[in-house]
Image (cartoon, rainbow, N blue to C red; front, side, top):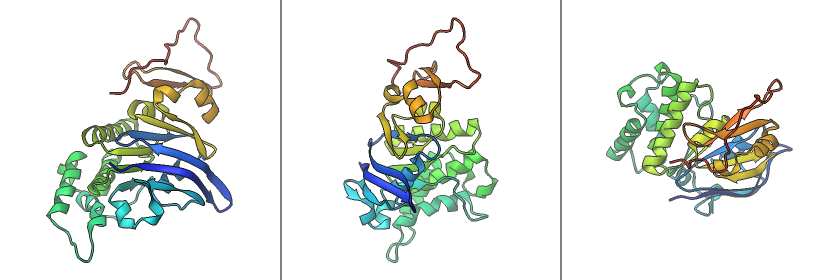
Length: 279
């Protein structure tokens, strides 16, 4: 399986340094979430991993080879990217969008084939969009459209998926729908998934590995049960909170303390020392 890592990575926008001397190994075959406050560098890190930004220093490595030294189509056969807020041409059908994922396999010598049809159909089935395949993309709900974009990435048949805030602008039901889909893809196909998430509770519930980004570096990385602590949230987000055990999933549950918050008299909070591992 394809490995992915950032080593000694520094990235800047003109004179503003966003990432500095960052090292991060992405666990193969697991789901990783990048979390951090606005401006911490998490989306910049994802974009650099996807080769959309070129670093000033260091590199991103696929199987120990710098992505910046690899042909574009070779990278696209190993790693799919879903940017934040993607836009498709008006009138495009779901099937036509998903078919765009087969671009890395097309050339002057290889045109559309039966294997491409199979890959598109498999992606539609995996995302539950078979019956919607011929509908215009803009006729779908927000959650359905996001599934269509994920299906396009799946049609690339890559071992790695990078998603920049895949639940942004979706209501809670559609957020859960998309995250359940990604969880299922990981469980059934063993795909390595890396995504930027804002919701800490969703991150702890759905991922195996959490990377907290602060001031352009990795503040902490590991299993949510290991690094999702009140001290970490205070340091990374500047926010007081309680971290207890999620009664449904046994994962860390983040409860922010606003300015008006005060401890409930007599309340007790279960320890997060040994939460039930994600299964």
